[in-house]
Amino acid sequence: MFSITKTYEKRLTKNDIEVINRNNVFEKIKNYKTENKERYIRYYEKNKSLNYEDVVTQVNIGLDYGFYNYIEKSDSKKDILILVNKYSKLNDNYIPKDLEEIDQQYFINGNKNRRMLRKEAKKAFERLSSDSIKNNTPVYGQSGYRSYNTQKLLYEKELKKKDKEIVDAETARPGHSEHQTGLTIDVSSTKSGNMLEFEKTKSFLWMQKNAYKYGFILRYPKGKENIHGYTYESWHYRYVGKKVARDMNDKHNNLTYDEYYYKFIEK
Ligand SMILES: [Zn+2]
View 1: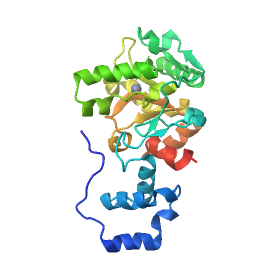
View 2 (view 1 turned 30 degrees about the vertical axis):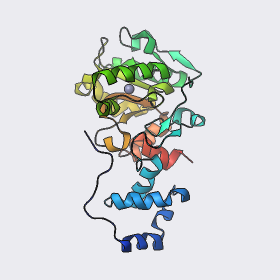
View 3 (view 1 turned 180 degrees about the horizontal axis):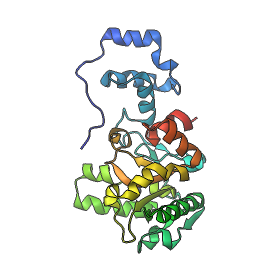
View 4 (view 1 turned 135 degrees about the vertical axis):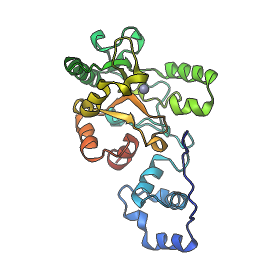
């Protein structure tokens, strides 16, 4: 398991805080928010190894409060760029308006009730899947859109089997699942479904090289668990459109979508 905030031995001295205040270091950072000023200073105090830019981004995400302790409403006006995470939540009645069923040839056998995505994402995924099959590195959909209630049942079912901390690292709470956006799909390299093994397949390597060309990003990358809050998922892809996916791939490979959103999309 991972921890949300690391505590460093060296604390900020009174003098350090005065220096921060005097130089207004955070105010010079893009996306600085006046209302968060105190939070930046307090967060930096606990995470002195971070640079000022990361402090601003991480506090804007809500990381200083910890998972599920600081919750805002997801901004659905952002359309395909909407952010849903442990700090941004969809309403329980939010259903994307343009859901469409993915063609069966691009989806695993069974799981029919999870075969939908929003129109644009569905088209992009079908192209991706089709090309991957031609390349002999097949990528099939395994689980697409899930409603608030489906997620609620799934989360509650997991809670009966595992400790809450483990469930939270693996399964989103209802309203916090990206699958509710209709822009997210779990994938598999076989028709019978093997998403938990996906990382070991050549289909995964193909996705690493090509997913962005179709507008998809790996949403929960390895090494960034403290930001996105999940154990690494090699099978979970989010549609953000070609422009953003390419920009993230080419220039911001080290950022999760949570960070990218607060740096480049929010305003
Ligand atoms: Zn998923």
